[in-house]
Length: 147
Image 1: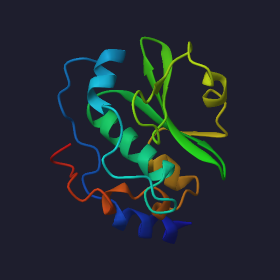
Image 2 (image 1 turned 180 degrees about the vertical axis):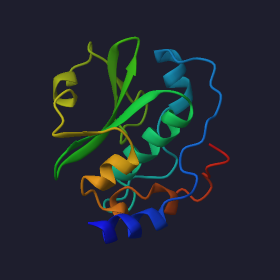
Image 3 (image 1 turned 60 degrees about the horizontal axis):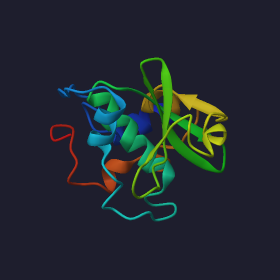
């Protein structure tokens, strides 16, 4: 286990999380920050829901949101964001409105993940391979300095 963590840590940009000012931590501010989806297309096992989720969690946490990575083992990953004691889910593979609220159909599916990770380190410690969450190898224009 120690070797796994050392190997994983070497692949992660340092520093990973950086503080970036964001003026609005409401649902509207969340929507403004994440936009309508990725310019980088979904590619299974290259840039799929796990990389997309780890990227969104990183970006949101850097901007002061309480964001977590959710996972249904062997199936799907998404992000949970807590705003004013309400949980909103972000479907990373969606184009258009990525935010799923309690009023949306399918909300109950998102509210029952198998695992919830506080951050990338938590995911790695619990056995998620770094290759599953290494968005920085795909989104080369995104850097810790240019969040």
